Image (cartoon, rainbow, N blue to C red; front, side, top):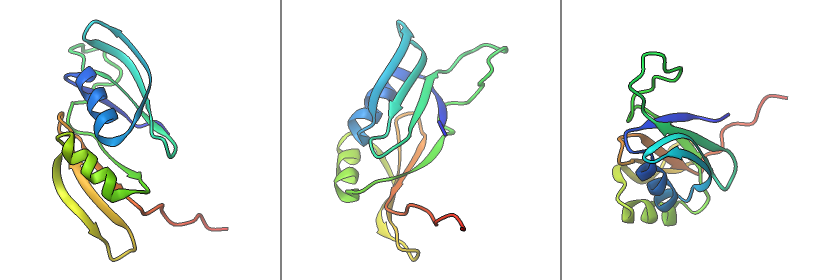
Length: 127
């Protein structure tokens, strides 16, 4: 699965996601400040795709910036939290232990998207 989002300033958001969370830039296809397609890899597995918001009624992906939300599994949560805060992420929920065995936190990026990181990997699929 490749979650997709749009950004008012896609280049800035890409830089933030790399610096704050540790995403790895795989490809950025752009004309100047307009990012047509970007792919960022999440090192433990998976990734996201994003691009600049478009003011075009024919846009097939008319996503509004700042409306995206995602949960990502992370190993060293305390280090990731400190990195995110140092890079300017807005803290919504500080690191906490949950009643279902996860350790997690929730922050917003500069576009207003919500990013939740935690140790919970989900339940195993039934056999």
